[in-house]
Image 1 (cartoon, rainbow, N blue to C red):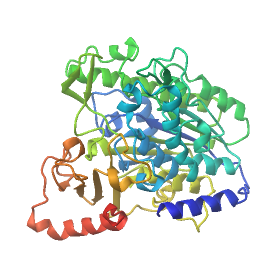
Image 2: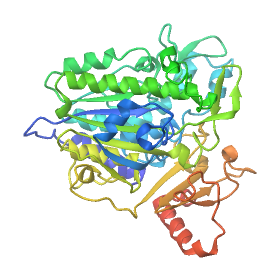
Image 3: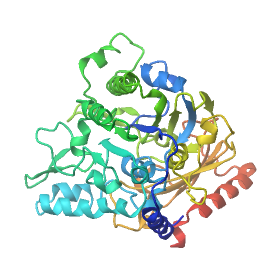
Image 4: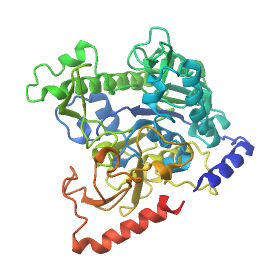
Length: 473
């Protein structure tokens, strides 16, 4: 599906009548972790990190343990969840529009008006593609945005209500940015919405209570366990006597436990309101993050992330568990076949009975597997693309793409695009690479020269180019 096809689909959507409902449609709660490596959950085998509430949710869910996001940085990944499209399709393949975050925040010639204008030009892109909240709202849902969200005002993505307005928040601990000329602006990653989870859950509770019999969607994407890892002392205390845990991981683990606590509070609130059997819960991570002992940032007293996690083309930045639970409808089971976050939109449209058989999406509908009525294709290929955080231009992903990747079976091919430079952006790889991600989960042994894999590598290259070939532009 190219961008023209997306726009045609969008025109069909807005012209379509509301879907008739013979019974109450389920509520939808999307829980999105911010910067957490796929392995850092109790239910994924990490015995050090404490995630009892997520473990409980996982035990009751369809568990897709080889889930992927297309890109290992938050904004394009979040928009892929919202749209069911890859970054080169929805057009938001960056965190920051031109001229880039450094120039936007450090130039004395850029004040709030100029900063807002640059960000608004990019934030309006999402208005041109159909989103999950837009689809749900057209079918009578109320849709509430909270937490991490880069697309300007909550209305831009089709939410009916929300917390993020693209304006700075007085006294905000997170979400504001001071420019070189002293103006205070909304950073762009969620502004007031970033209080959710870290400071309060009340806006979500009030929204759910106000919905009464109206079906609702909640976008719960707290700024957790994202840095700053400044969780309340009680979460650090959970790890105080666990001497086997390296000290550089403790602040990150404390933030994970804080996030897990909020998930438990949300699950309990929905249950106390008698809505558990009427609500689909979905969990996914926007991208991975791993603390690096060798990268301590003394100015802010924080450890930075490893080069194999956030922003990188490796599984420690791209993999995520995906959980789907609708009590009484989904089947608690573990699925090993690779899936993608772009599958969530068609899955939820099917579960809420909004999708039509004529609609085509690049992702797959996981609902039949989640309910136990069919198996997944274990030989499916999943894809993605890596970009710098700053875009050089809007509307030209082929000019900025640094890596493309495809996983099929145990093998993962990563192609490297240097864009005319001596080395690739981030210097993650000097050239193309192939890894057996099952036998070699750290992706440390490049198999690209293995003659016995030549046929498999050629198949992966063909799959990747058939999916998207930026050289064809």
